[in-house]
Each structure stands twice: as C-alpha cells, then as structure tokens.
Length: 503
Image (tube, rainbow, N blue to C red):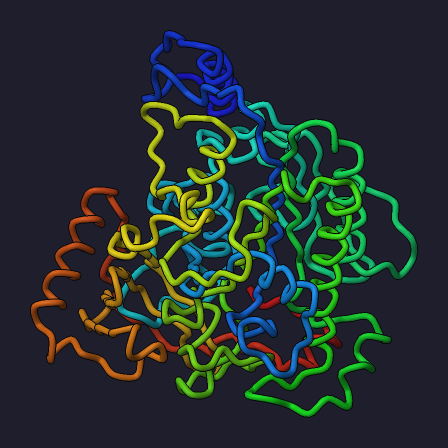
C-alpha cells in the first residue's frame, strides 16, 4: 500500500501531466483522464478576502447602523452584493475545507472544529461522527487547481486545515504562505516571520498581501487574504476603539471593541482595492469578500447560554447553528467593467461553489473522477442566469454537537436543505422536522412542516437521497451518561482579558 503522502505526490503529478494533455493513471486514485486543461485567453487575477466570524448584518451595506465599513460599502456599491450567500458549515473549519476542496463535509470528513470531545456529548442520546481536523491530502485544493492553471498563488492568514509539513498551505498548492491565527497582538506565524512590536494582525496580513500583489502584478495571481478578525479574543487598536465608545448602540450592535475590529478589516479591504487601482489592475482582478460563518450572537432569543458580541437579526441564531444566523453571510464581488455596478442578487450560493467558479474563470476544467459539489456562479457575476440557480438545492450535514454554555446547546446533530424559498431542517436526535419559507419568514419563526406536508415530504426525501448518495456518516445511538457542566463561553470583556477562543 502506498502512503497518503506518496499518493498525494503521484496524484498531483498526474494532474500536472493532464493539464497539458492526457495521462494514464497507475491505479492510485479513482481520478482519470483530463484535468485543468487551460485556455489561452487572459486570466483575471483573483483575491479572496475572508473574514472570520463576521455576521450577516455586521456591515453598513448589509444593514448595520453602528459598525462603520465605508470601504466595503463602496466595494458593494461598485460591484455585486449577494443576499443569499451561505457557508457550508456553522463554524470555521468546515467552511474553509469546502472552499478549498470544492466538496461538502461528508466527502472531506471535516464538519466541525476539533474533536468530538470539545463538548460533553456523552450526556446526549447520540454519539457524534468523528471529525477530521486536517484537510486530507488526497483532496485537490483551490490553490493547486489555480497553480496548475498558470497562477502564482499566495495565502496569508488563517488556514485551519492543518499546519504540519504535509498540510500547510505551502504543501497544498500555495507558492507563498504565512499562517497565523489565535491572537491579534503578539501573534505567532508559521513559518516564523519577524514583525514590528505591537503590530495588529489584520495590518500585518494586509501588508503581506499588498507586497504579494506588487511583486506579482505582471502575472496572473490568486491571493487569499484570510483574516483572523473578527474572531475572539476580541481585541483592537486603542485609537479605533475610542472612535466607537461614544457611538450609540443600534439594533443589537453595541460593542466598541468589536466595531473597531470590523473597522480594521474594512481598512484592509480599502487598502487592497486602492492598490489595485494604483497599479491599473482593477479591471483585471476579481475581488471576493465574505465570511466563514455567522456572527457570535442571537443566542439569548433561543434560550442559549452563550454570551454575545453582536446580533444577526433579523436572522435567527448565530455561529454554531444551521439557522440562517449561523450560515448566511455577506458575499460581495468586485471587478470594475465586468461585475455589474451596484447590483444585488438573491440567488443562493455557497462555499462549494467557489472552486468551480474560479476554476472556470481561470480557464481550467475539473478532473474526471474528482467530484465538485458546487456549481459555477460566473454567469451571475456578469448579470446573467440568476433564475436558473434559484431552484438548485444546497445541503448541510452536521452530525455532532456544539455546546452553548449553562447546560444549553447551540446545535444538536442536524441536516438541512434549501431549495428555492424553502428550507428544511432534520434533527437527528428526535426526528424533529422544521420547514420555513425564507421569502416570507427570513427569521425562521413559523415552522410550516405540518401546514405544508407536500413541501416537507419533497425536501425531506431530497435531503435523505443526498445523504445516501454522498454517503454522509450519521451519529449512532448512545445511552446518556451523568450530566457534567457544559463549557461556558465568556462575555466579551473576559474574552479580551483572557484571550479566550470561541470556535
């Protein structure tokens, strides 16, 4: 048997060969024939700016009257803003795995953060499915795909898919990479990188990104700027915090430190776009801004003990839940002269759609035998094809638990599907079914499962068929054991003081 690392090397070697024509396979994987055959027309540069834990309403252009995001608001005004953009998971890691692999969690094994023992699942009636905490090396990454299409590739910031030699982005298709998360000041980097005392992580990462753009402006580049902000610990630059201390709270948005963190992400976006303008790269660069999951808020209304730093209203719930507040996020696209100016699109898109979209724009084609679960939204970015996409289903699979503190849970094992305006959730512990009409009820307040049995039956059958087709692993029965205290998430002040993580 070949080791996974050897298989990986042979796998990519075959990809490289087929990018130039065809290749024979030696039986090492199920992938065969052509892959990533590039076209000759000019390729657009691509920049993916990913915020961490930024909620749907945490931007001015998505409704906040408290947070100040003038640069991102301008980006939306000059580009396209999606109102039904989704992550593939309710927390960080599964979304990043889906974006990078183009595959849903049941294919990668990545559906949550860390091990199943982060929360006391033994008090519940199901044993969670074991989670994979590093993206398997037999998965093709977006970095590898873009590199094979002729791009120079870079990633700066949070990776969260493994940092050892085999899983670090430098081994997964990125020519340049500096990984950092966990702290906003006095942070660690991998590989170790020198930086000035007291520099803020968002500023450091932006400096790295701008340097990458300057050095590679004469060749196609794919750049991932993956901020750790606005994840806890909630820390920000003092001068920015002072700016928000006198701003009145609005609509559940109230914390000056969190507002200052958002402002730093906004400054980063502004610096990137201004650099592209100065280098005359704007019209040939697609910039994408989004978040990896919903904001840390919306819990109190659900009776959940977790502390809150923001509010996702009118959406229900927040990070760690498959209600809209946990998975619907901002999605903004900018490319002057190509992406329609000031356009809003309500066609649903999700994390797995990024891979086929960028692969198509880069002139590549997917490898035979390597399934991509998403579909390209490239036509949407030119103002076309919105109606056809609105009826395709989007699926979620979360076979585990996420605690909420004080003996409560943000989620128990659950699956979900959205098709058109309808969304169905299937809770695995008790078989409970919830059905919502998102067009009329974006806050998911009225469960219509009994009132609309025909829709319930259609979506539940669709969800079960998908689970069977993709071989989604399911939690197994477990006899509940003696209750123990559920870990509690601290409030924002304690999180800042203690540097507490809230995955």
